[in-house]
Length: 453
Ligand code: SAH
Ligand code: SF4
Ligand code: F3S
Image 1 (cartoon, rainbow, N blue to C red):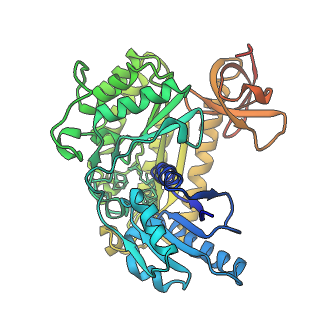
Image 2: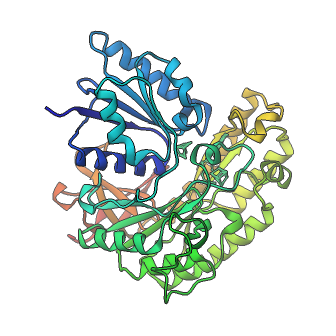
Image 3: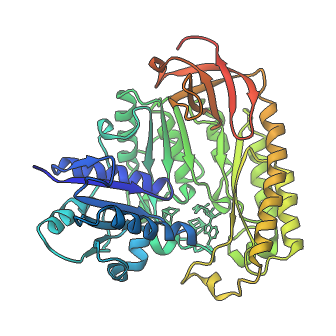
């Protein structure tokens, strides 16, 4: 009988995409994928290291598994960002940990697990991706049947001073455009309605410089654009995939031609995630973001001048070392000025080995919490106004899954990436429906379906 692997994922969309690829590779190698750690022979945690709390989660989970499985001893593997950063020291964290694989070892996971099952101890692979290891995934093997994540670039070269990602994910590597476009066409032919182009910084897309197969623009011929990412956007839009979203955009590299492309193609969705981190030039400089608040605001203006009204979302860090009350007021001012459709607020968390870790983390825990709550409250008020503008309006929603809140409701996202709930029969899952908004909740819209899909 073949072994059962249970795979649990923390962290960002990159990790979700990696886990999806790992699952496909494991199934292809003859493993079963289990949906609980209880009876699995092998338990794999795909980990995130972006904040201390996220990084700690894997240790809590290993402890829980250990208590659950006192009588037998499953093989536990740690993969992803914590694995890449901590390496072999993880073996000492628990006697159960027997396998460590880094962020670019996904395609080698079946062999690594095979070795562990054969009795080999302390297996570790933190190597780079190898020649011939491709990112492509068959459309039929994905988790969702309607929405697919498509990585276009991995790693990060920005080295924002607070951030661990450039260390856990390594240097930027772009995927050839021809491969991306081919994958999206296949997804389209299999009935997928929406794809997300993903990367830590999609604007840095540069397959001719930092790809696994250098010097190639294959797949972009005939597509214009101010940057290679803009050309890729147009090439992807031309596949006629119904809905196309992309994350994350880095402000400094955000070219207004991205907005022009969205204006040209209706299937490029009207949502942009453009993290700003702070509204204070002083803090932005200490974070080494490479832009000022006013540079950022120019990008926002370009987005706001688009043909369609675009949703804009962002990330903010409060309590960066040395952030004064005046700096924080600048952030509040920027948030008021932009009026985001959504905001992810984080308390600064010191990451060992980053440049900011050498600074004195001198904003007290209480102060971080106070700023967090204050910003959250402002955002809630601004967001309420924005959400209320949708009342009575008609939006197009991809019906993705049953709602967790009510048995009668289904849930999905609008093209502007709002969560929308509505009563509908389960048979409509995977359809795009016209929905009239009847209620604006704090983080979602509620509505009624206007026509059967
Ligand atoms: N590449 C993306 C996302 C990086 S991680 C970007 O540049 O936007 C997602 C978010 O986590 C970041 O935008 C930032 O707001 C937050 N983050 C990253 N490192 C952090 C740290 N050390 N402490 C608190 N928040 C952090
Ligand atoms: Fe981290 Fe900055 Fe890279 Fe984003 S752009 S992953 S915040 S270093
Ligand atoms: Fe976390 Fe790694 Fe993503 S640190 S946010 S899982 S790139």
